[in-house]
Image (cartoon, rainbow, N blue to C red; front, side, top):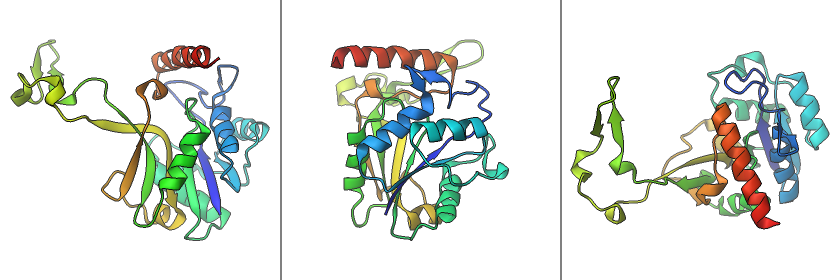
Length: 228
């Protein structure tokens, strides 16, 4: 069995109501549900939430909400893994079932990305997830103090040419595939047993502030226009 679990709690402070706020014509959460439905690989698509408005939005978008997330797993400091482990237990998933955590604020997620993640989860691989490269060499990063003065974090690279520096990658914050037993064991996602699947930078945007939201709207509009 293949399960999609979309964690979507209420009470977002920096972007109030961001999981149900309309983005490019539909509730933000509905974009993740849409990608999961169109991927065509999931037996069930479930939203984990404690919030009734989010539950209603999820059902309207085509997802299931068969349980409520307990309050102790719905605060600002709850990490992702225990939320997915709770959903797996609530759904009675078998240890070998494949479970994909899909974030609720991932409007650039595409069905083919989810299919790639599923295909890459082979023997010996713990997790597969999307990554993208940093747009500037992190080895040339600066530290800035309270007075505005700056210093290089890695001064040994002050004269290193950018093209001679190793590419650096970061989590795209869109989805994570693993077997149910792996989620329950709560091992590290970012490690040598995991595979990062590259995405172009123009399809990756965290949405944690109003500025992030506006940037995502502009990126989405530009992508939509270019693909029309």
